[in-house]
Length: 263
Figure 1: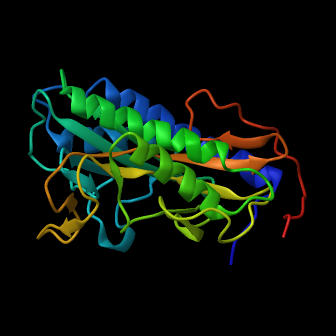
Figure 2: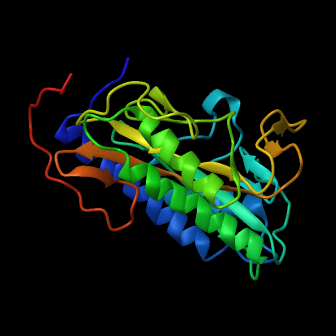
């Protein structure tokens, strides 16, 4: 069942999502050659708790860390460790928090020092495809309109979309309905209605979209070991259209008192 959020709930989600964006922005300054991924994870957890939030991923379905840190051919769910970032790496950080009863979730792919032109294009394509998906999040449309817009942009750039993982609804739970695939034909799936909040998250590969799961049971990598990138924002569909909640400068809307959900 899809849970449509009230204005008050979207305001609360903005606060949670803004914390996520602030911490991801802060981490970017520490994504440099020589840093251990475990240190990035520790920093993110410490900052979340300083801001009154709980890291959303730690312990979720047994995941052992606060941030998913995926490097180069790793797509998602990379586990922080003593591994050291190297010049030229492409690193994706996926982070979420629980704050005031609501979840926020976002991901960014960052360069480590100077990266290849291919890696630069891949990072840009991941964010660009999110932007196309965002444009398709129009009241009265369908969820697959978002999926189709993401896929079309990625493939036009010469890359592929990962099929095995999807975006999702988000709110009181980290993963709510509906699922938001990054591929598909338009005009399918649930209607896009005001109050819908989604984590739209293109995961893309420079090569083929087939994947493998590493022996740790979590880390997803491209089967052909081509580079991967990930971009994600928490987005609410409001009367003004789609609004990105996971921005460090996102305004905190007024939180009215009693209010009924749209459905």
